[in-house]
Length: 261
Image (cartoon, rainbow, N blue to C red; front, top):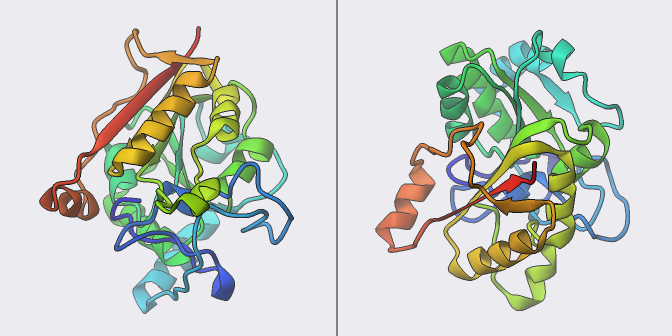
């Protein structure tokens, strides 16, 4: 997704996150209806591709300082977000934060919300940790692993004010469409975790995938056209990846739904 560039270190066989310098939102989410269990990082047929990565010295230093404070691996325990953030606030989940460029900027612009970024690529998470530390952003927490696992096991029903999925990998070849994150089962899962009145915001630069996303989102009975004031901002910073998409003439499509009240 965006220039939140690819994300996943996992390690040597970790699924690769995206095209070019982006890490798709899919980079942090396995396919909801996939088969076969693997590691907790990659527990199913994933919507992201394998990619290796290692930390630079400054990234490792930031990781050592910040991960114990604001980072966790995906697990089975329900998150106690009030304890983790040290306050109660509207909760936003970002699926596929990449290198965190937009994540950090949006969190800084919305100090009244708690934002959890989910990603698998360790160097990308390390870059986000650097941004959080450098800019003293107190309202970001990070999870490393499959976002579908997060939604299924770590997020309580009707607890999220917003979910963001920016520039998921479109898997353009027809035979790979089954790997796409944003299909009916994932829409249903996301909708179940949103509070009534909560918002799902998706952005993509791939025209055909945009239509498929729109069709699946419109078919989810718990989601509807947003005709009330949104509880979260829809303004995204234009990252390096999105700038490149504009340069080659790609249309950016933003899709927004609200959970029925």
